[in-house]
Image (cartoon, rainbow, N blue to C red):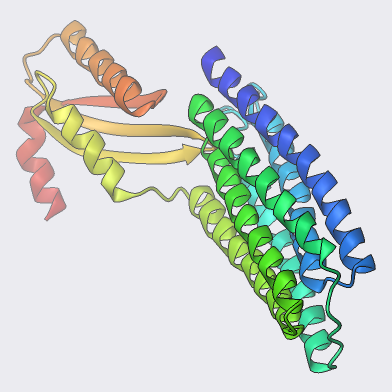
Length: 299
């Protein structure tokens, strides 16, 4: 349990760094985008603004997640992290549609003025900073084994690519392609919306206890390799934040002693922890004499 809480604290460090970086980038881009007449730079700034809100929400979720279990939350508060992600997705979608609307209105109205080329320098610098942030958070996420922080690192990389594309659009405007700045602002807003939809799908999948079949198959095959395990009758899993909870029913020799059955459960818990980092495994042991009955029930 202490190891699990330490991992969450490690992930919090990445969230704090992301908040600081995104606040600076958002303010610089929005202000300079306005004064330098670079719509795509302003849109990128609003994109980073949603990242500030997202990182703050994730940080709150992480802090709540590591609160110990209490009478109202006997399983702990681990689901606070996906709840925070769900809230973040709504914020991203709102901002994305706002930027998309303003960008389209700007293009239709013909309000196309070539942006100042110094805005391209800001975008290039932003792309470099965000790529370094991506590498930092990815390294931290691997150490903490945090799915949430890994998602943040992917968002960092997407933002780096977005800033690079913004720089290209502003540079293209110097060749008389002033329309490219407005078009890029639309593309950036669509990236915000796309990311918001993906975050919504991931968080709602986790909150509804969704779990991928391929992982269950891996767990089952690993358990079947252990001695004394004759069959895996059922296996289920769910996510609590970044933590996986597995419920498995195994069939063993009916003449096995209670101590021997207990030793088998210990082996299962150990192998799933060592190979798949599963800290919570609930093993139910049944005698193999019920195997035929179980198969009938499944038909």
